[in-house]
Length: 555
Image 1 (cartoon, helix red, strand yellow):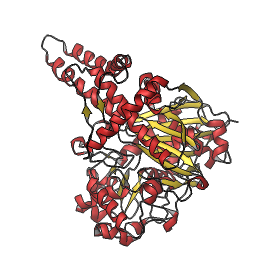
Image 2 (cartoon, rainbow, N blue to C red):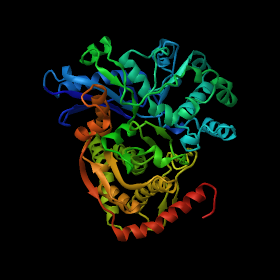
Image 3 (cartoon, rainbow, N blue to C red):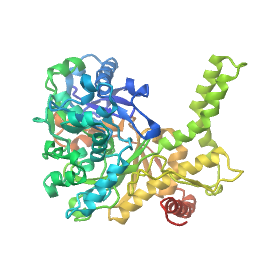
Image 4 (tube, rainbow, N blue to C red):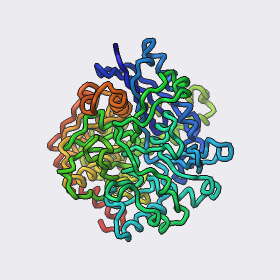
């Protein structure tokens, strides 16, 4: 009799549900649902770097995505689900009350963005992140040494402090703050109350300053030294964090009925999307897994023996068990990858979107159709034109920091720059420079790992861009000068969650056993062009030089 694992992948715009046969590894079906409030642009102010998501979006979409999934699979499949696991974006925390309920799910705060989940790409907490970094550097124990040495505005403590400072009503009502991946896991298993709440190792270690070296979290006086508003928050956090191959709880009767699943189905501890995606990619020492989408998240693992006492500088943390049990998981990434291309597309589309519909001689339906067709094809056409340009021929150099810099050396205050524009610079020249910038930004991460003694011998890529653009992928292979494997699975993060679900459900004894059956095969391999790789070595130096200049140095 077939057994199935259910992986739920909460991305920036939508939730995906994936059903996988635990015995064959077959991806039976998947379904996607957009977040309804997020789709309308509610509660966000992009000009102020504010991106908030309503918890009701997550709950509504969960029910809808499984309703859609069950319509795509044979009858009675839901009854054979042995386990559920969840991955989400991160760091995406929310303020909760003493019952463990997100404040935005209470009448008083239902439309207050400060009471909602603060999405990973919300950068309103730059000032607070800098204060946390300064406090750690001044402390007798540097509580950031396992987190790259720099705290980011994308992370838990900075976001919580910023909201507490901005909104006295939220500050008064908030008992604690919880991460998206941990809250959803607890919601399904009925353990959201602080007395029962246990966090996964992934979010706690990479974003919340948890580490076994100091028996959990930094002490309360460290946080009150930054701001008294943080007084007591750390005392609400359970230091007993768990890796994702362990059971967090069992599906409640209420959620079983709403989702069409058996009561008591095991639920695994949640983790971030990129970490579970790396598991689907069979991550191992020497292999860097890159989740390539609107931003990137780079994951690799190493043994405790190999890493020793080293603390890798400028990354998003090194945490025991955050990716694979018994291994040190290391995270890095870029704050914008596909988002940089989208920015350029929107820039070019502005006159089409605003002028074409206003031309009286053009029928409105025709104008809307033309706008839609151009928008759908513009990046593909730019890629075709840029691909034939000679490497380095345009003399244009760009930075990828349009949404700040995540790693190496987090700094969300920096901006992108473009150097070398001339009267002859056309859109394909600029687009090629932007693609090269994203590849250069990724190379900087790889070189930081290598400089710090973490080997990177090959790269495995998952995410939408890896299947959409041969031009982008070949440019990356040339810039990185190493092979790139693109995975077959279209839902690698959800597949990683399903692998953990199979383990917590008892279908496989270990993650390694589950990976042998369920991990994704390789779809396509890109090999570097040696001639292009040599040219990119010199162009990469120009990228670094421009970055130094923007950071206040000299070209």
